[in-house]
Image (cartoon, rainbow over all chains, first blue to last red):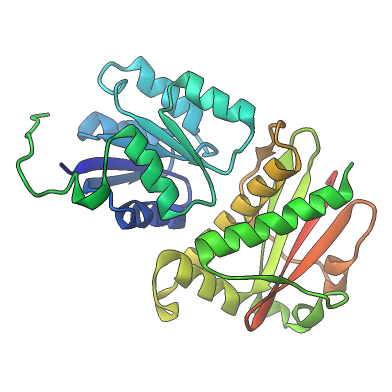
Length: 142
Length: 158
């Protein structure tokens, strides 16, 4: 099964790198979406099926924590797992991310292995092409 | 304030970020002052700064040759040098200083919450030698990176 992923980061180069790193890690990506902040992310979520959100914390207009809060308030999005990828490393901030509902956290800088391990924990086993597009997918009408 | 601890955290952070995400090994330069970087014409240099606040506040500025910025961006994005545009370079160096600062501060004080500002272009003041001076509130680290050098200056209380 391929997963639709939304990457949220105010840095365009970082969005590209996160996307490539997820792909290199072996995770099966269906559709890919990106946004520069939480507001843009919510707009994408309103109009597209997303299986996983990967978000930065420090962004203008709506930061990652605020995005998590908004997603958890909306029953359409509340079950979508959210991974925070950020430079923030303090225990207090990590605790806040998790308390608000993030499923996982990765600190920058990161390697493809960091991404793979975290996504494995959250979504499932991505090794050996499990989660690839081969085989039948359930079509979900949206 | 733990000046030496902050320097060590910064050195570790720069090496970690550049090796992990940019595949660029660094070596701390033993040159006095700005080494070759201070001789580089200003129009061939790129500077990016970021302010931070929290238990302590300050500013981090990175200074590097544009050629190195282009090469870093190409490696970061998995592109050829020739395909790298100015906005991609600027965006990459901004993300670089963001990651270095965040990692350095979290290594320096794991329990503290620091707020990082938005990285912005920064021009070193003339004469450039001032960028490499050390005083009670600021230090600069100079690194050798293959054919180039890059410098990172931290000023506390700015």
